Every structure is written in structure tokens, then in C-alpha cells.
Amino acid sequence: MMTAFACKLKMSYNLFLLAFALGIGGGFQYGLQVSVINSPAEYIKSFIHETWVRRYGFSATEELITLMWSFIVSIYSIGGLLGALSAGYLSVRFGRKKTMLLANIPTVLSAALMGLSRLCGSFEMIIAGRLFSGMGGGLALNIHIMFAGECAPRNLRGQLAITASTAIALGKFTGFALGLREVLGVDALWPVLMAAHAVPALVQLLTLPFFPDSPRYLLIDKKDKEGCIKAVKKLWGDGDHMAEIDDMLAEQEAIHGERAKSVCDLFRDQAVRWQLITLFLVVSCMQFIGINVVYFYAYNVFIKAGIPHAQTHYVSLGIGITEILTTVVSGSLIERAGRKTLLWKSHTVMALALGLLTVTLSLQDSFSWVPYCSVALIFIFIMSFGIGPEPSSTSSTSSWSIMLLAHRNISTVIQTGCLCFEWCFKLEPTLHPWTFVPFHCGWSW
Image 1 (cartoon, one colour):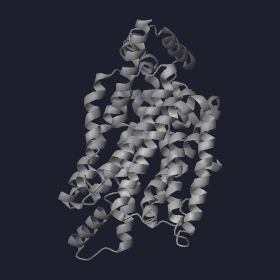
Image 2: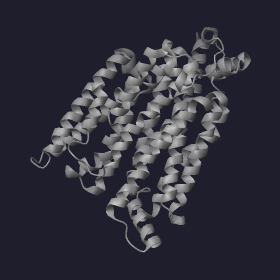
Image 3: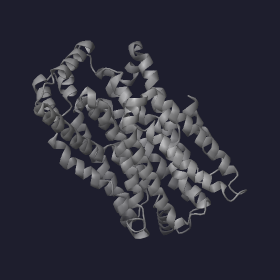
Image 4: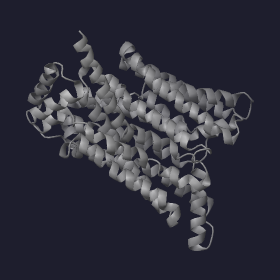
């Protein structure tokens, strides 16, 4: 009895360490990039203006500066799409662990470009840095989810997958915290703030090499049964894990040594047509619901509610903490309520919150109490997102569990591709009452 307990304890400890090593360079990086870009906005716009005057001898128009800033914000999603498209091929060619480590190369490069942009007097370096950061983030996030799902035993797969959403929430909170004036949110330190994501990349480069590659990858892709058994023992302890290994062998038989599928192969294969539709609906709804746009315009709502501009960043910390807590709570709710129930209920609450937010934004100048309702609706929206759509077990893990390995590698690409739609709406710098209307499609689907 004590031996079994000790094995379970060692398994949980090893998987927790693996979740940390994966999360710090995967979901954490994505969450950090989503939130850290808001704080230095005015400083970067001022830098663009100063650079333009120094180069050309005249001031750039406000519209041009806004366009350049919007391009800096939105190009991250283009890089994310490029990184996601390469995830399937690289994960098979080099393995999950090596690909995760390789994803840190564009991340560190982007940190160097953005950190040195002011010294070099080039705002183009910020644009290039955001592009490379998106490439590293899109690749790492997909590999993170895939790696975590393949390293966990069946009974712990959901719990380990939830750590991806928790890592994203922690990344957002860290971005908000670093953006405070007391930390890095001042004019003299914004290049350091924009380069801060190099630190988690270096942490992953130092920690992940101590872990084995995915047991499923070793067995099914590399045909290395001995390596698979060693990886299982290192991750799960010395207990009896033959049932899990037999499942992997059965999966290997099911795919009959097929190569990893391309995107075109995935769309043509009728055997996974319904799984693909299900995955596309779940993931696209999660992105189309407009979570990043809500984060982006939250500052405007807080200011309209009468919160001093200097205090809005502290309120944003409350949003980050709310999302962290709800993603942690979702672990127990998912097993009790079920993924489907939790998804449609959360999406319903989020759709109602967006609808009411549209109304309150239209009436915010009519009644003094309306802006406070907008603030409350933002918190309700974030809570619903953290409980339902965000946890990986309701979206990313579903893609892992309903597809064979031959399709699984490329199916994760869809998760990042849908993100481009939402980030395009950040091109509009002004908050309007109808800003959130397009994202009701995330519920109606």
C-alpha cells in the first residue's frame, strides 16, 4: 500500500516539474505577450514619433503612428500562425522535447531585437521582434499542449492539460505586474519590459533537458520501445505501467506505421471528419469569443468608470488573479460537470456579458452608475472564460484524445490559426459600443 502511494507521489511530483518546465516556455510565454504589450503603448508611440522626426525631419501624422502601433500589436498573430504551421512537421522531425527547445531560439532573438530597438533607433526592430516572438510562441504553445498530453497517464491527463491554461493565466498576470510603474512600466525601461520574455525562455532551456521525450513519440514515431519504457519509468516511477504501454502499442497498430499527416491529408481523411469539425468548433469559439479584445479595451472601461489612469494597471492585476483562480477551480468542475456542459454554459454567460457590455457602453454617458456595470461585466466575462473555454482539457486535450497520432500533430495548428481573426480587431484604437458585437459568433456557433 505504501509502495503504491510512494509511486503515485513520485509520479505527481515528476509530472508537476514537467508541467513547470513546459509551461514556462509554452503557455506562460503566450500569456505574457498578450498582456505585456498594453503598458508601454504610449512610450512606443512616442518612440516612433521621435524616430520619424530624427530620420525625415518632420512629424509623422497621428494616423500613421497609430497604424504602426497597430501593426506592432497584430503582427504577433501572424508569427503565431507561422509557428503553429511548422509545429506538426518539427514535432515529428526532431521530437517534442527538441522542438520545444528550438522554439526558444526565435523567442530569444525577438527579445534581443526589441531590447536593443531604442539603442539602435529603429522601431522596425520592434516589429521584427514581435514577429519572431509570435513564431516562437505559436510553435511552443502547440508543442506544450501536445507534449503534456502525451506524457501523462490516462488518469492524470486532464489535470496535466489544465496546467497549460494556468500557465497562460500566470503569464498574463506577470505581464500586468511587470507593466506597473513601480516595476518596468516607465519610459526609461520599456525596452527591458519588451525583452522580459527572454528570462522564461532561458529558464526552460536550463530545465527541460533533464526530462525525457514523449513516451508516445519514442514508441510510435521512433519505434524505440526500450526508450519509451525508460521515459515512462522516469516520469511515472517504477510501478506497473504495462496497461498504458499496451494502449500505445494498440495505437501503433491502428495507424499501421502511417506517416504524420499534412494539413491537406487531414481535411481529406473522412475517418476523422467529425473529430475535425468538433475540434474546429471548440477552438474557434474559444478564440472568436473575444477574450484578448476584452483585455485590450479593459483600460478604457476602467477610466470611464472613474478609476484614475495611474490605478488602472492595479485593477488589471485583479483581472489576472481572477483568471488564475478560475482556471485552477475548473480542474474539479470539469470532471464533475463534463466538458460539453461546462463549455456551453460558460459561452452562454460570456455571450450575455458581451451583449450587456454593448448596452452599458452605449449608455455610459447617460448614468453615473453604468460604467461600474461595465467593469463588473468584464470580471464576469473573465471568470466564465477561465472556467470553461480556456482550460486545455475543454479544448486542446479534446483534440489530443479524439485523434490518432498521425493526425494529432497537425490538428494543434488549428488552435493558433483561429487567433488571427481576433487580433485583427485590435487595429481599431478607439473603444466603441459595438466593438464586441462581432465576437458573439463565438457563442452562436
